[in-house]
Amino acid sequence: MAFLSAHRSKGLQADYVFIINNKGKSYGFPSKIQNDEVVQLLLEESDDYQYSEERRLFYVAITRTRKKAWLLVEKDNKSVFVQELFSGFAKELMTERYTCPQCGGRIFKKKGANGEFFGCSNYHKGCTYTKKITVKKQA
Image 1 (cartoon, rainbow, N blue to C red):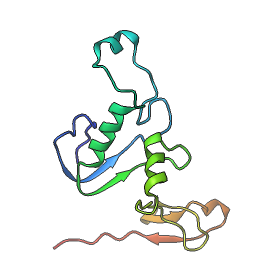
Image 2 (cartoon, rainbow, N blue to C red; image 1 turned 60 degrees about the horizontal axis):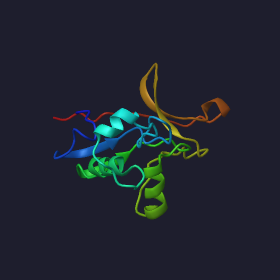
Image 3 (cartoon, rainbow, N blue to C red; image 1 turned 90 degrees about the vertical axis):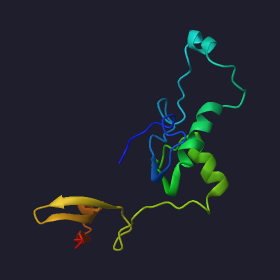
């Protein structure tokens, strides 16, 4: 596994790509921090489209995959780019969220005395759903 910036991934490919930091905050993707005026003078003249350079980088990051890309997103804090994707392609996008079959809560990987297992986020509210994690050994 390799951790690369969107800039570094240009021209490369991978079977799977995870794009992190898709937050609607100052240091998210896109960043909402403005360049210093001196730095801005050194940069090429940009077009008037908001976040145009970061938008191109986002596209580069998404298209580096041969098989599947994941965008890791906070439910209530989606970046502008993720919001645009969902508004235009909601049916085509798949969100992975594992829900508890007993109460509808979220399923998380946990560790206990008998090893790792999946447990419900509503355990503290009385949900008892668990599922043991079994690892298949290759011969």
